[in-house]
Image 1 (spheres, rainbow, N blue to C red):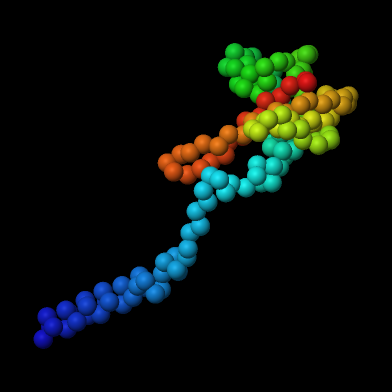
Image 2 (image 1 turned 135 degrees about the vertical axis):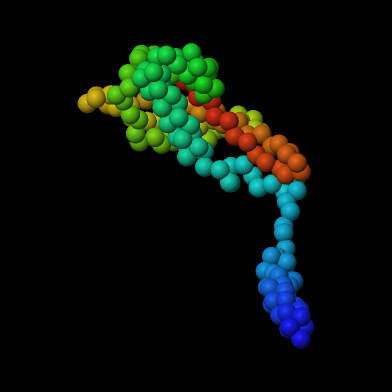
Length: 163
């Protein structure tokens, strides 16, 4: 009799635990997944904010300049990273590490250079101590569609220039 009660309790326990995993209770079983083919991708300009992307990359560029000034031991490594952002020197003089940039905003409209390249002009305030400079730079945003394991992804690369 004890064996029968133990077996019934085990069956009852297994059945009650299994009830939560039944297909009618699984919320994800009823969901439909929508797959978008490459030809149905949303237009690049409609899903990305060029100003925000460019401002973020410009901040990263200036952070690297600050790091280069504060850690001269890593100057060569940092210089290689800076070359990923621009092929020219955007700042002609040494800023030191006591500067900041503010009020980054887009001037004018985006220019379509090609199907994959957009050019945006950014203006910003460069503050060194109590001195404030206004400057501008162009951001060339290159987009590329890649296919990774069947998933279509879009990559963006920002490179800065004076013209």
